[in-house]
Image 1 (cartoon, rainbow, N blue to C red):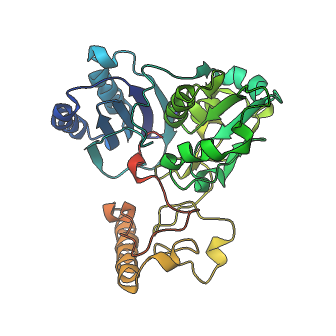
Image 2 (image 1 turned 30 degrees about the horizontal axis):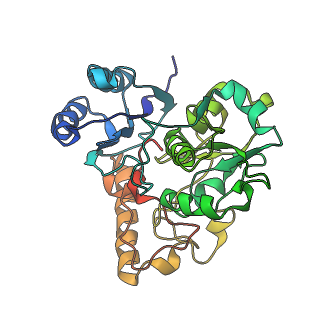
Image 3 (image 1 turned 135 degrees about the vertical axis):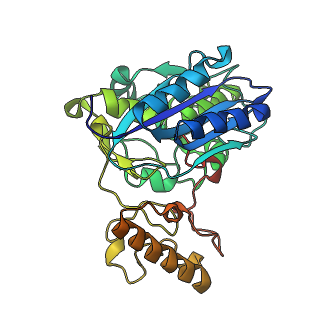
Length: 334
């Protein structure tokens, strides 16, 4: 048993929840009763979440969810940390648990072929397979699988348009569409993206079961084709093999991982901004961020938790394409 305090559980499931709105209040109440923090997204198409807390409390929430026959086979991924990954508990209602914006894309009806982590290396080493990273550009920037294509998208909802234009996905002269392998952090985005490709006539489509997190958890580093570290949507910022916390730091202004050398830039200010987002916040917003940072330092000196530290500012300008996150993810499982 790890000696660390906080258990993080990431999970999702595509399943029709016609009564999803009525589930919000009792689920939030149960999580708060067990002092579990994080975000749970509910939609008609299913559930998507990352939560953290004391191990017994997190397992109690998982048991609560699995007591529903529709979620009885809910799978989750675990990791441990010495500091709290989240400081609030939120249950939110959404149109989609991961926003693609393409009506009719339903992984409960059609989806790609699941590939277990131990079989993933052989698949992506095949020269006839097109390997696509379905994550946002700032995630890909700090780590990806060797040889994978980076679509350079700012949000997941931009992926369908990219697939329509990508040279690598065009049919051969005889009209045959290529084999495609897709992956993401925890599995939810690649599950939906393979469903989309199947609906577009791609027959040989595969995705990494359990996502990058399950791969890093189960595949030994000496056998790994993963390069870099994996961005996660919580206070750990990134994880490495074995799901140990990485070394990346987070900009409190835009909630994106700091690029190499960012802290040496004159545009970097601890708790306020980084070179990516400096131009996207007003002077008033920066002043508020400075006060938030000051309060955080004071709270830390007292040994308290200042929950305002995790609240990003409202940007006065859109973030550039290498920064903007898929807000629909809301720091959930993927």
